[in-house]
Image 1 (cartoon, rainbow, N blue to C red):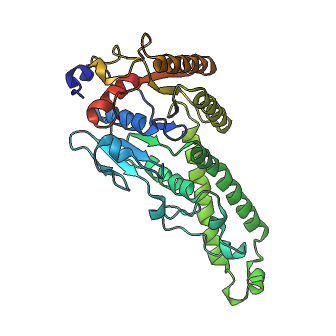
Image 2 (cartoon, one colour):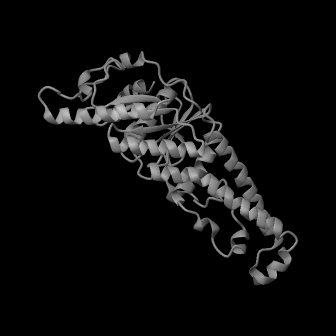
Image 3 (tube, one colour):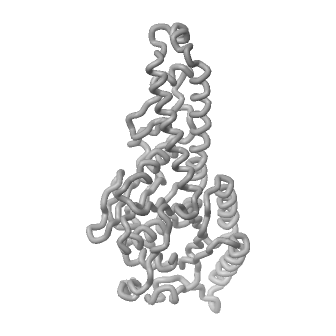
Length: 337
């Protein structure tokens, strides 16, 4: 493959109007990591301190950027303010009631007769949720670009604020009902029962959790601050799944401003002045397979345009080879501008 004409790509405006938080979602294998990496790279090249973070357990951010991405935020570009992190759920205290890694339930778990955190669904999502809270409050970053896990995991991540807030509320209500009775209850549990100070400490942690949950909810539902971008490929099943994802995000109040259709078999040379051989275009005259595939894509593209009225629908071409490295990502960023 020939090298991209980088000077020509430089003439195109990067993504400078993106909100503070850009989340790419969709089913596995549609190109979320590529879009996130391209967006973050363009943002950082414009001078915006940008963190690109992957919450997908099957990380490929390092491959896309062709540089090592650490498990916790670290600078990965010497020239531009680009930071990266690939969240490793196994290395994070996934207890959803933990704060910055050192808050615990104290005696509340004993009071409820078990490990409350362990009963929560989705340890991976809980770990990602906890770290997203931390990164969104990090003054080092002016923009956070998130490569989310596949659709099901993403929805569980978005459900966590409601689940956690509900449980925290129930526990707080229980604490109020038990106010003044902790000493008596302690006898029921024997010498190892929670004392009032321990339970109160646990309640303080829960109140802190509720505040952080509300802060994250406010961020995710504010279209001026957050854009959840759904990525799909031009196939009918992908369109349908993306529509369901958009609908579910709407139920959570999470704004979807952009739908990205990736791997379109159509040369988009007008997007960037680069060698057309980088893209795959259908040979509609001599290739029966190309004709059939292009009809499938055309149908899906038409369906997407109809279903996603009110959203910006962008196309990214099907590259002749895998998309990784700065040159290729800058072409993708131009398609997303």
